[in-house]
Picture 1 (cartoon, helix red, strand yellow):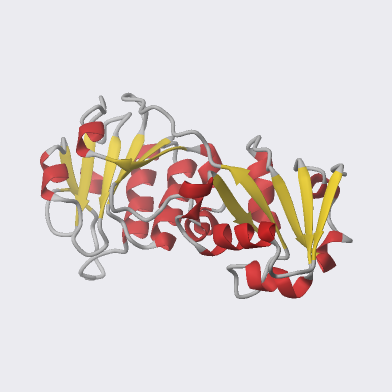
Picture 2 (cartoon, rainbow, N blue to C red; picture 1 turned 90 degrees about the vertical axis):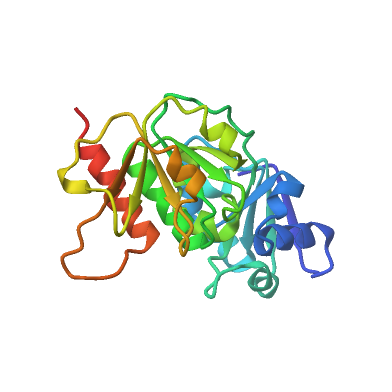
Length: 257
């Protein structure tokens, strides 16, 4: 077990207030340099990727049942009254435990690494699902242009299901940084370009995924080496961006020579 166990029973406790900011404010991690991850599945995923939390936080009822690998993982443990943990949690059904992790140092962009470029995606669920697909299909670098949902927000972290800890994540990027990529840039559209299943896809490459309503910006589209479209024999007007991303990244992964 960790040496230091702090018990909190007052909602005015300063540490609890900081935890609440991390859990409920999607951009608080940028100011505090810490990330909140909630639930044993996500916490286990972080540990499996070699991450070490600064603080493990348990609801009182969960602390007595805490599994050893979770209870002993952090530098300190905080045990919170159940009612206070419910007020801290961002979930409808609180998971009763979470970790506070140090915010990773932003990595330097690697020009030749298989990458994703996220162009002003707004929905946290979409962004997290795309990160999960990126990790699954071998795209190790994600470049989020300014205007994209905060990558380390609790909602994106939950949707990513641990993928964050397998990826190099670059936030607040500019087009100048995209220009540093030394791999072909691919875009997708619902109405123009070569059909994805008929195309010979380059590897390594970078896929650009655009805003849910507006798509990829004209400036980013102008940089593309190849524009592709996904066959939709059922006749839908367009696909959800996370669904389209999974299809495109899978096509790149299985097409690797």
